[in-house]
Image (tube, rainbow, N blue to C red):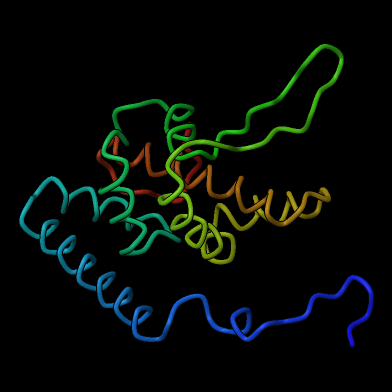
Length: 175
């Protein structure tokens, strides 16, 4: 007998979300798509240049560079605020009358944002510019996820600046 408020677990709830065969199939499809994207980048000089430039930013690897190239082709031709909003990491403040709610992120291209989140985790640990930025936000008492989203936004700004200038990242703040 279960205690009040606890659910009885049925055998269906104990199963993984997808059967092993279909999960393996999804991973194979992901690998095939990754290989096709790499082949396309190898064929086009402009995409090779963009990938090379993006990879100069510490924290952005092959997959995140491919995500930028494939999903955000506007990058390098728009301003930083538009780039952050396009990916969905721009903070929006909700105000109504005298009520002011904390800023939230929403919208944008969620698939790119989820890939870049892991790049932000890496950058918060290894990027010489973003690590002190992350540490300062944590020291001010900000939640870790908020600090990671701020790092992610900075990564987007750096990527936009690198593609706009055509110069490799030199470890400096983008203006």
